[in-house]
Length: 364
View (cartoon, rainbow, N blue to C red):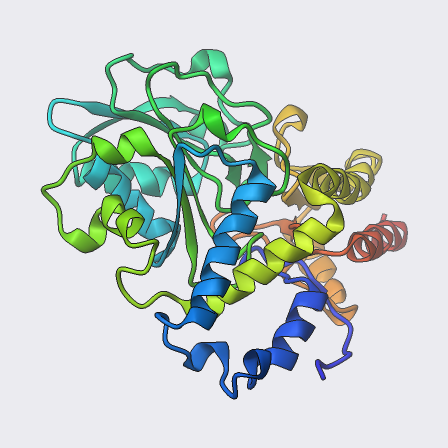
């Protein structure tokens, strides 16, 4: 059985997975449904794997209430490959694409877009070190643009869009790698949603892409087949060998979400978990200071600083000794970060809340 050693996993990604899912995967690892084989050993053309594959897609459709005029693709290469595939497919000649700049990942997406075609900054909060997301009123684009790209949640800076711009006939494309399925979203507002699995959906290795069918029908065809979304759509994401174990785990995590009560309940859980930690920050009289402005705060990634670097080092060291994993802030910004994704238990956030209160009491 899985070790009972107790740690509190606040890693930013790859991140916590539901224990129930890990234990089921452990039981089925060497003999999947009395097949005599692991799911990792099966042909991806077999009936047994096909059932797993299709169930993952159907669970995603159901949980996220994905309309019928959208394709659901299970891809490889992470969100970083999507930074290139999106402009390759949708940034056609004579068009521009706007990128809403809210952190390091939107910056990487913009830079990759520049290698493909004509892209521009539709809005940015870089001048304030990305401590908030751009206001919707500040977003500039033209109704003839190919698309507008947005990063819904920013892991490094701890900010999250609470609402999304209405881009009209211009497709809104969202990188939701770090908050997908953390709350209900109206998928029909987007031309495309994509996400690496390793934060809220499962282990690394699978990338989900949800794409409106009319975009696929009008996409660029003068690119290699493996980089065309239509290739993967036509082949039910089985054009080449898929990451079968990762897709199996994706399906199991989605099943766990269903058992939790769906996205409405998961959103309530995430709100409650984040509130525990934000309350400590807000009531600490400056002992802890949050990086993000309150109206832009992320429920997934809670970023904060202490009074000085030496005190931060002491905090992180004592937290490590107490069984907390992954609380170091990203190397580009420093400080501390608690990533409270869907599978992080409420009890872990309670434990962190108490640790922060105790540390403050000892060091004021």
